[in-house]
Length: 444
Image (cartoon, rainbow, N blue to C red):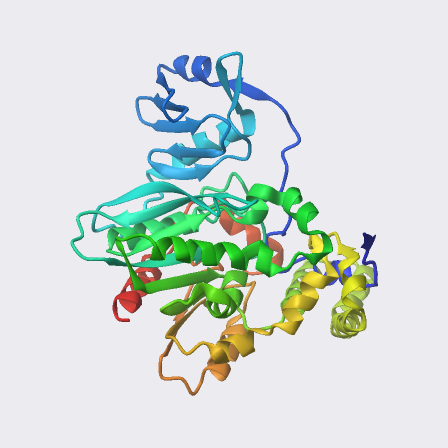
């Protein structure tokens, strides 16, 4: 497959609704023996042959690992490791990076409990697409002691490889887990939630190799969301007529399309999404990044060069779109975009399936939620466009939240160059945001 190297493409795709699309593979092969490591810290280590699990109970923390799996629990919170637990000569080993990650998760857990957990719930492991070539580990969080069938939600990721808790593969050590926060809050307030590892997270390069240049958001995201919705419909504890979708970022962009392609939801929650074309969003983010660089650049020559790039981006974007539209499907499938981890055909598919078309088709209730301090999708552009497109609908609700970032946590960054720094600060999804989701769902 040839690389698509037309001028400007790398810049225009460098920032698409961060983090980056392709999975991050840990290069190191250093593995640590689990039993001796934890027993040295006075923890009790037990092996269960029934489910091939290893349970470690320490003074303050409990960990559960599974042989030949990335699935794990830290103090009853589901996490996804970057590497499988390895069994060799009767002993279990964990990658050093994963050990660091779970210890960090345990360290921040007590200070990272979302407010408003009013009832008990049970987390059960599930597998999305178990009979397919791309099975995904997931968690179904369901309320306890409920006499009637409950409403339910499918959580859908944004751009990039992310685990079931909404943790980007590019940021494996972040203490923040937005999808876990949403699932636990909703489940404790009477709403079941299913979340799962994104296909690019689990299968990465194998998925790209299987589909080649034909890969689109259908294989990357849509198919798995529909499988998750169908799993909920087949659960007798779930009200099959009250299954909703919460799509974050690109997941919000795709929510109306997922609904139309077979999701058949009772309502859509667009969580910091955008109705714009992917390259338009990327161009805006690229301009914001260059402007952030301009703000701290003192050299006149460098400033002029940066300013020239800023001014050139609209023309470059237009040229790129025209160049792509001139390609045949086969040519588009044969042109690979390294920054995207897919071919030009991926972009063409989104161009041919504009968000506004599926928004118009979606007659179900819609809740559009937007953080006011989001630097990746913008209040004055993306949120305003949703309001314009849905202005004549009486079943659409708009919510704007001051002081929050792209994942509805406290915003600290004020420019695109620092946008990922918020992930380093332990936080949870804002409690008012979660309460509003519960209120809206129960009102449908």
